[in-house]
Image (tube, rainbow, N blue to C red; front, side):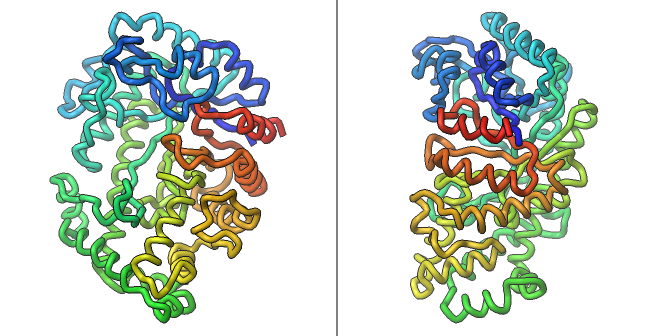
Length: 458
């Protein structure tokens, strides 16, 4: 079971022959690039930091020139202005003359890798190109709307421009979009403060027979249900309302809640389908994959993996099991502990019973949510991880279409141990997984690499 090794900038790592030798030695023959970026104004005190806190790999540090390296991310090629002339809200990153050598080195490194038999992937990085981000050193502006019609067009155009300059890519990965899936107040992804109200979303809601007011009503009504749980209602739900027809009737009992769920699924499918369509129109030979969260959370974030497999080549559900932002262990803990806080009479045990039944995910008795800060138990891998991995494989259409993201942290928070990585990869391998995309090379620690190499070498 081999990883597609994802590398985040600084991409000088790819100009290091030792990197490619390291991949070959581990039996790895596929490499992905997260952002096609080189750096201007390196060392300038006014430039932003090049590295993140989790960027600890020695080759990454060497390529940057040190942990405190600074530089402004810019494009590695001059954009073809004619491709973007009709776009109003998107500006491609320019390539200053000062970075010509970096761009040439990157092109030469990828050309050599291709000639040596490596398959190369690139991530759809349009989210980093809005005015005020790549090329300026300032944070990206928030997107006008998840349903902004220019966004998929820009994605296709930018990939067309990228492949015209770097024709060695075989695959592209689309990251998102996702609606939110957390309920903990103050969390970055709190569903109850999510704003759907913009002109593009209003227009889309109207096109499927809804209004944004109706969507907001459904979201708010769902919170009322979550804050009204009792021991009796939890017991009735688990025994009588959580499976099959009973589950369908519970989720549709409040028509506004059903419309909220329906809206999110329709909107995400619309955007993802449009992204894929624009890419196929402009770069017809590249294979396209989409990413999502674990199956338990797709009803919240809007993805329907069985439908998405009809217009993609492969899918990358996220086997992100850490205890922090974007990690499913953190999500489960946040749901259970928040439900217990909102409904004191049910306690953590009752909240766990409700969550497990509502989202069809088994939770082991020896590893309650309040213990998630400790090392995961063997039973947790054999229940929760096994269940969600099996469902991922089924929903994407089998192991040949299954290339899950695997990582150990986000933003240097909630790190999983190398022992937990071994437990995760063992479950994936036992279910027939052939490859996965490791996020990211930059953050690999020595013990993590030993585990990755152990599975890759077989």
